[in-house]
Length: 345
Image 1 (cartoon, rainbow, N blue to C red):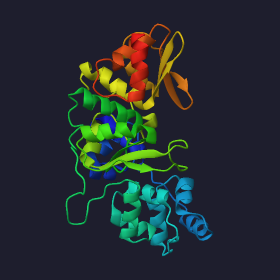
Image 2 (cartoon, rainbow, N blue to C red):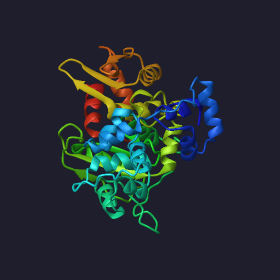
Image 3 (cartoon, rainbow, N blue to C red):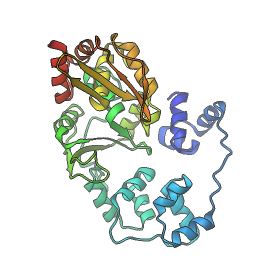
Image 4 (cartoon, rainbow, N blue to C red):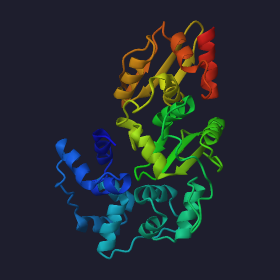
């Protein structure tokens, strides 16, 4: 793991101690890297505990207080527990709260303890949200090739790495890897499932306030610290919206397959009467790399909302469609169809 990855993990809120626990990099070495790059590790967040307790007793939720003071829910829970304040046990458990706390703790037992619910209750919520938890005292219920991203040596691995850069996620506790898509693309998750040899189901859910737009959606969540670590090693970081750069250790002959994965996840292909357009959004660093290794005919990265965008020029559309999609074995079908038409008409 290089210096930039250590710094990016620290930026997500992990301490040097936590980085050591989750990645195997010694705390002493991680601390030295962070200090060498100007981080003062002696700075502690002084929380107004009495104020937090008063606000909580006045009816504010633990999550709202975590957001207010820019700390984790677990930190708020520890303040309350250390001061003998009983944590409220709502009758209707909030799924998003369970998922948030589980992401922070990484364990069923700690999540149950913080939220004041039984382990079976927390397990039921997590399993219902598509998280594959191992059965107590036995092997995981479902299996998959957790070494899939260890060495990127095929177009399938390069493609799914690119798709993970765009539309997948590695949770900040480094225990879960997942992809959530609109229900119309469930077949694409079935393809991912087949490539990684996953024996579990693709879970489907009705639309909600936290789903993709207002559409029904589908999800695959994999519990694997090894896969999470491999993805981070290749540059796919937790909370990656603003910190993902170019892929690491990707063979140059697989660049187009990786970029096709990024385009399928975070791109757009438009067909017009006499022309078309390929657009990809992401960080400046990632898009600048894509533009530098691909064929000519792509604009420089330009600001787009809170990220950046590149798009083909008038003469680059056909070239990029053909370069990314023709003679490939894996792609999102609806985008492949447009790219094929754009490249061959």
